[in-house]
Length: 474
Image 1 (cartoon, rainbow, N blue to C red):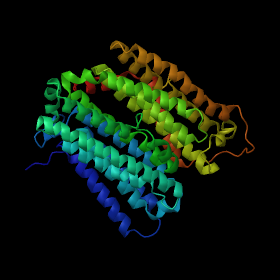
Image 2: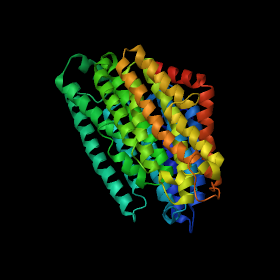
Image 3: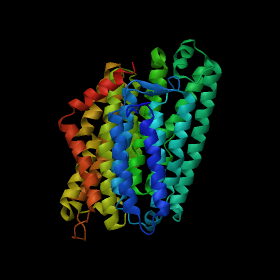
Image 4: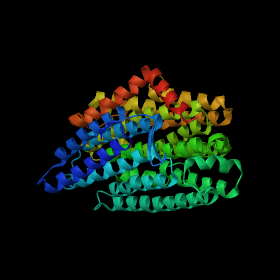
């Protein structure tokens, strides 16, 4: 029997083994092992990432319930890169809880990542549900990791309760689908929808409602601002990207690949949710005085822009949504890393803490400005191409009203992003000392800057990659 590095599920098994190793090291290590465990986790993730590049494309397991196609490999690499950037920032956390319970923190993140990676390859309803729960349960724990803080506990409890309800809705919707099709395979969804079964439509609608919670789309976004404000910032940077990307992966599997030729029937519903999510996220961000809550509502708005690409239900629409996820990863995580640097120095997440930042730490202020401009869609950084291509894909499908709404709300988004820029560059601070940036946190910021600027200057290879991945789904 030969051992094949490209065999399906090998990356997931290696990641699970890494999680167990991290937990064991934490149990046998005495004293402050936060740095040691963090580096072990990072090095292990580099190896897991390497396995995704030698994986055999097209391989499958369990009667096609688990597939290793281009789309799954793209999603897994996105999840791993986001996790590595987050862990770089986490290595600089000073709270005593992270020193004492570092193994628990990293084990929970790796466990959630295993769920995401299984979800990326899942083409069976039961496997999708199990993977979602494996991903979600550690997120509730990590949100309330600083459990002695009452605000953190409240946010984690809210996240858990709403998440539990969403899981119940997903399971209920799946039960209708199974009742109609008699199968849990995604291939059975398209023919059943084509037959026009009302129970099938109800099941798929409930399923989308449950998945909307996972991506924080309107009206299932209520958990995000509280969770973002209460949890540690490097974790929030990851929470804002990886689990939401996993939610989009599941939606694409179900409503594009599974629904097949009947996917267009969901265009009105997805377009309506996209529009309401954009409006809600952008308008609710304006009055925020806490930078993490502002970025939370901003993230909700960006979910709406990604849904515009999905609403097109075309190869180019899905491709541009995937491209948007890559641009959002670097722009959003970079902004949160700057937030962590400022919070460590000022002990505040208030927007007022950014007064005079350009005079105190000009490079840090410039990095934040670039990230905000990318999130706002200003040329020529990654976010500009992401929004432009998503709008173009929607125009090709005749969604002119949705594109117009998105363009108008982009101007609103620029308003609250520039409010932060105003504090950094125009308003002054009583303090003149520079803000210290730990080396590893600075490295995470630089990586995100390279991503934002690199994609902005040369988007072609990333767009081609997204188009190639999406084409396999149609």
